[in-house]
Length: 416
Image (tube, rainbow, N blue to C red; front, side):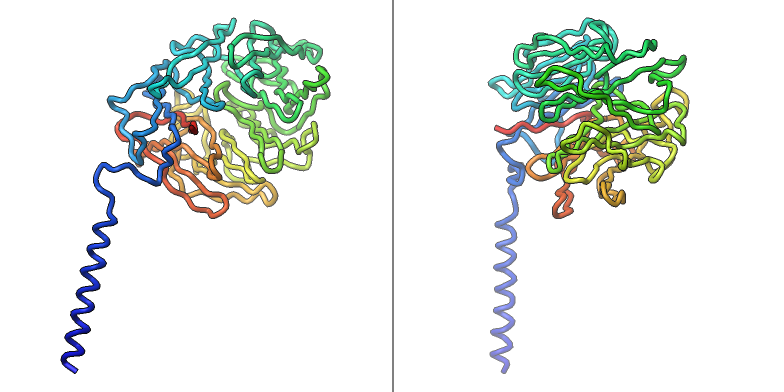
């Protein structure tokens, strides 16, 4: 019996020693690349300083879960507010020196971000909204060329190629625009916000005569305005030109839009809403709206991404006003914005386990390889980075965080 106990004890110790050896063998060596990070991805990171200037970085072989940008090559810009990707090409609002227009950027042979071409706006104001559809199809808005006109351009050559005239929709009001904040394409139709009203003293938004929003729908095949669809009980579709507030649900093919409403007066009767134009239709779904008052008020929806009838947006943890607390936007940009998933059918909101955001970075979530990526800048926790969420499994993991590298104002992924 003693021999059996001795052998049993020795076998147990041997097993523990073997497991310990295996554990040490399987531990990654220091400074080895994280094999969980796809090698065929280039991460485009827009960092920013307190004055919004910053750099655009391209990381491929040097990607990691904690990124210090110090010493890495970058493309310097006066306004670093994120951008959009088409294949391996980047586009952003305004030039490196912040001249108004649309800037096209590429990766050189060393994998660094470099300027390609620039399409200048005739305007000196911060108003060059744009949409890149393909290598040969693009649209932009330039007030000097006509507020009720949408310009066409070639995203490869960055040359203006024509315009679409919405002037027949004018009501003779002081401030009129079509496509200033919303330019969306679905099938062969272009959807543009129609804003007719007056910019009142002390309010940077245009106030329409009626508390409603309007979308003009243009048939690109037959080159004609199909209709204007309106939705009452809110105002102001979109908010900033480099802050897109519409989303195309790739699964249902529905289009969603954010009406931020009047961010100064924050009226109860015309609050911020998320609206929808269903697949195959050109009219607002009058039976559908997601009202901010059901989650927090006063406040607005200010981010948007939709996938499979799930709406991803931020909801503040307390009432908040862009005009509150002295200089506008300062108190508004606190760590109070939490990423939520709202079911479009039940309208139930579920807070995601992602760090709170301060709204300094305005980039929307995006989907890549079946996962949705969310940006957060959190002063309290010192977090500035990205988390990815699998909508099928509900699993969330941290993609990366910046270390001693300013704010994260934008993130794109380019695949080899």
